[in-house]
Image (tube, rainbow, N blue to C red):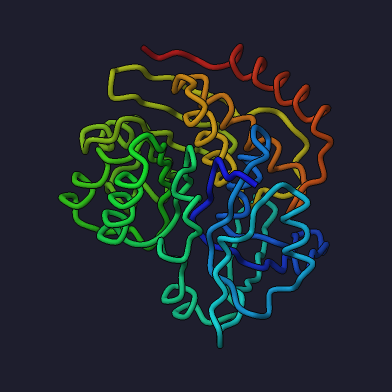
Length: 308
């Protein structure tokens, strides 16, 4: 199987508790998994790069394969457990994540570039949610050296809070898109106003920033001065976990396929809408998926506001 897009992140087994008492145990999750869901709306040649323990159940590998995901990039760490966490939701969709496995082990044993099959390095695009900025500088440099045309989408995490501005200014010109949410951006830039957040990332050298704002949609700034605001695409919400990751996955495929940033952002918004509709891995019919995805792209295009 030729791998065209890769999620370079993590895999977590989620045990989910909803505010109405419903539960979902032993559910595939993690930022990488949800990014793959967003990618899969548009592409069926995907690779998963994450570390797991020997205890990862065969049913999960089989489910990923059936979904169109190559699992050769899942690196088994002997003597560790596959990451597992409680996901506890409030009525306002606020989520509390409580790790049931060792968090320090989770961070120390994370996937490394050396773990990947050689052909993963020739993928069109990567979603990356991984490591601190000094580590990211090395990773991005190595990926660019192996494949200068690769599209790199960075999704930040709380581990990036408080890292020096000088390091961000070194990293951001080397990627194609950064897509944080508002809370993450406050921890990184110290700013809370959405437009100031986006302007700060642009000033730090990123070509494109997509600020994710939950139910309020997203705000996109490009270094060439273009700006636009996308609404959240209407859908029936089952689980809000991972919608932001899926947004980034959809954006990565759009950029990798050579679409303009505007058109790629429409795919990102649509990917997020599909992620909201199910728990874990969805079960899609590709023909009906394509028709519905294109319908939602048209809706998003008609409801997006150009700001410049």
